[in-house]
Length: 308
Image (cartoon, rainbow, N blue to C red; front, side, top):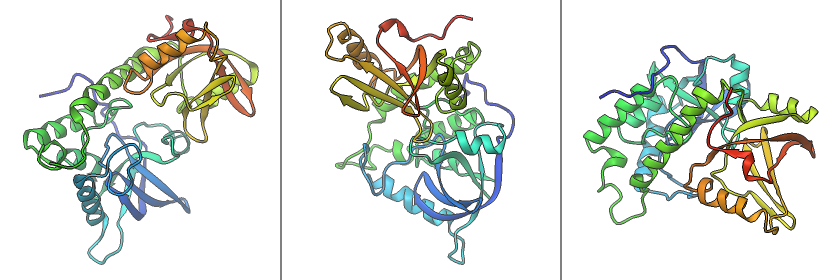
């Protein structure tokens, strides 16, 4: 079986020989990078939780994955290994270190030890599904798809219905179709949105800042999955991006009857387990040193990029 999404046949930007200082859990490690300790969140995998629930349950397979990862990165002498990290792009290293971070500020990358891609290993052995909630891998889509097929065929790890029997577990029958929907939307953005000049919050934040300084009209590819970040007396704030690269949507007059249909659309179509991603157009300005777009009309939203 093969996938219809082509994998880029080239290497991503790689930083070699980095010391692992801690294995946090199955999909997160801590490293010493340029004299600074950084968390690395492994790209395109999502191991189950081993110690902290957040929005996901702690599971037996999550604990086993964390134990496996600790053993994997521990050398025979008891010290932690050195690894290479590879970003899902060939952008310059400094750009990767700035842009390729999750909402918690962790670097997002592939991790290689002794030339083995640990991300693919996690999928192939069933420790994690191929995590496409934020799009398909540009570099290893085919390899990751085939690794997941192998794990499913052999009923390994998270695909074994008996692994968490009688205990809390994740519902992949619900999650995988939702992730696939989101991945298809991201793929459409990569194919058509970028060509149309649409800006993405995490990767194009400097351009968004520059546009905000002059009050330009822009279109952004925005993830609304998290819903309203903060309700205020006279409106609501919605955030997208990382803690350092954040774009705000301000929805004014949320008690106004004319705004109600807009809020209902956001809730029913985009928030939570909805589409999440949307193209938002509007004037961007700086407000309290952060870029902000005022969202007050449904015509500012679209499931499609602007026509070139």
